[in-house]
Amino acid sequence: MRDRLILITNDDGLWAPGLEVLARVASRFGRVVAVAPDRNRSAVSSALSLHGILRLHPLGEDRFACDGTPVDCVLLGVRSVLERKPDWVLSGINHGFNLGEDVFYSGTVGAAFEGALQGAKGAAFSAHPSADLEKVEPWIETFLQRWENLELGPNRIWNLNFPKAEPKGFKLCSQDNRQYHNIVEKRMDPRGTPYYWIGGDLGPTYAKSAGSDAEAALGGWVAVTPLHLDLGCPETLAKREAFDTTFNGNGE
Image 1: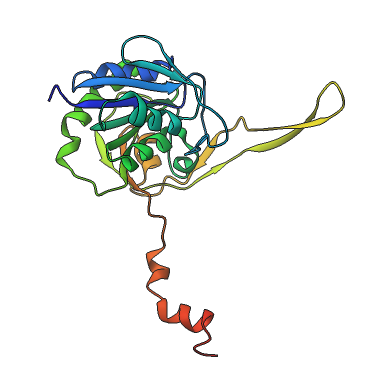
Image 2: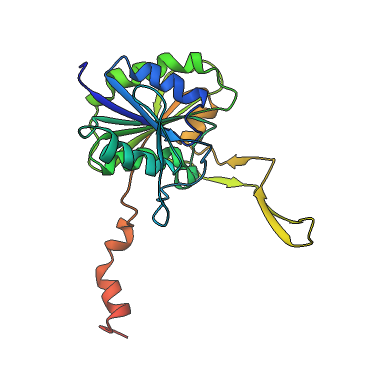
């Protein structure tokens, strides 16, 4: 389908190697337009720039740098750059995993979700920071050849994480749990005013629960996780009678 329109973005910046690989693979499936941040915008989740102007810089055919967030890039791409709604919005390839609760912080995942909200099929791609992207490339191609055969509902995306070495195959996964060893370090500037640095050198510890994305990716598989935007708790919504009793005074 050569008339397929594909918008790609990331949170590592327009010049990131992962975006170049993603663009190359996606171009085999349709026309690719890249709208990506002009610098690293990692861990901004689904942030929108509501209180400032945005600038879009054309840098060649179908290639644009934006001074906003990844979600800003998708919105500008869909509403201002493209002549119609894209068929696909692809985000990545992120330098580093987006496993477990990382998806709530990830600009890569946030951009893919924005694509779904705009009516496109969305997918986020991330890889171990030491992964060979040339080895990742054929696996993305295989995924894009087949992903439309397994339909997701509205406001849902695929989140893929590629292992460090050559993958053993694809594995459908749930989200894992992880603990970050972040620190908030207080420092002093030359004028004696404190400032703070959020970070941590140890990285996350994953539970690697059975069937999870972390178990798969750390075990050498391509972890493929379907995600949806509905954060409701069905187990609590099923307790409407208990809710009414508690909050509406229909009982002691």
